[in-house]
Structures are given as C-alpha cells and as structure tokens.
Image (cartoon, rainbow, N blue to C red; front, side, top):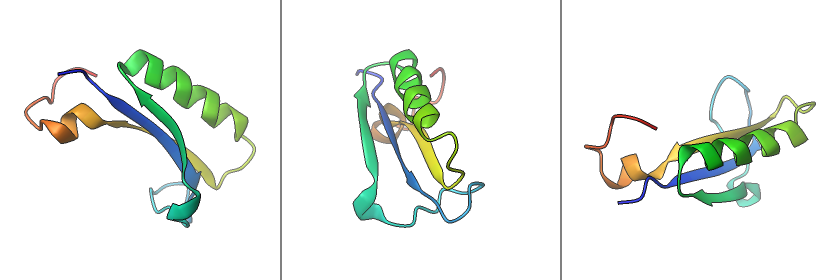
Length: 74
C-alpha cells in the first residue's frame, strides 16, 4: 500500500488545538504519495498564512488510518 498523506488547513478557534471553525472552508492542499512531498506542500501552505495565527495546516497520515498496523516510519 502507498503511504498516502493528506495536507489540509483552515481557521482554528485556538492555535494550540485542531478545533476547526468552519468545515465548509477547509483548504484541502492535496493527497501526496510520501511524507517528503506532503511536508513540502504543508510548508508552502503554512508559509502563505504565517502572519495569521488562526490558520493552521496539518499533515494526516492516511495510510495509518487505512491500516492501523502501519505505525512505524513516516
């Protein structure tokens, strides 16, 4: 199985949490085949909103959700 990664972001109520305010305005950056490309996309998206403390982007390890036994590595 590919080690798929999802990168998305949006406005959060508290930058220390993942409590997104409006799910209809989530910015889906994309799905990536490896962590390195997902991290590059995440850095680009996060850099564009660096001055907005209420915007948060994350990398989700989709392969771990699809197969929870895949806990090692990125």
